[in-house]
Each structure stands twice: as structure tokens, then as C-alpha cells.
Image 1 (cartoon, rainbow, N blue to C red):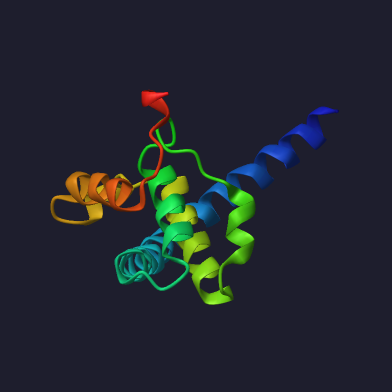
Image 2: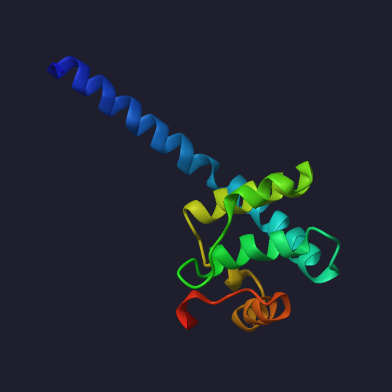
Length: 123
């Protein structure tokens, strides 16, 4: 790669980063709203709750709670879209996923207990 191509690549990368940063406020608003909807699904026990719980627990503590990404294929489209909004929000976290809720750590631990989600640190 010559110097001109290298400068062009750096300019392109800088612009992509700036565009990404400019979109973060919207990503966080959409992700926060989606996170609230997903948590409601988890505690409503509507047939997709276990899958959503697994997804959220994986974001909460992926070292402890394994996420089966293939399972997300079974979600309704709108629920899947909400998962992707939350994942996008969590890509550059403003705060950890459980911190969006009062007593969030206890809430997520209860979610794991309610759904019998295996804790990998216990294995």
C-alpha cells in the first residue's frame, strides 16, 4: 500500500468512527427501550422468555452464562430486532446491561435462578 492509499484508508476509518460516534445517542435510546421490552418478556413467561433470558444473562456476565446464538433464530422478528438493538447498545457500553435497572444485579441473578440458567463457574 502506498502512502496515498494509506492516507485514504485512515481518512475512511476516521470518518466511519465519527459517524459511529454521532449515532451513539440514538443507539442508546433505542437500545434502552428494547432492553426494557426484553426484560418484560423474561418475566411474563410468554414462550420466548427463556431464550431472551439467556441472551440477557450472556450480556450480563458472559463468563458465567453461556449464550446459544443459534437459539435466537427461534425468536419472533420484533423480539430478535430488540435483541440486536440491545447488543448494538452493549457494543460500546455506556453502562453495563444490568445497571439500567434499579437493583439490576439482583434482578439478573433472580432471572438466572428463575430460569435455572447454568452458571459456568459452578461447573
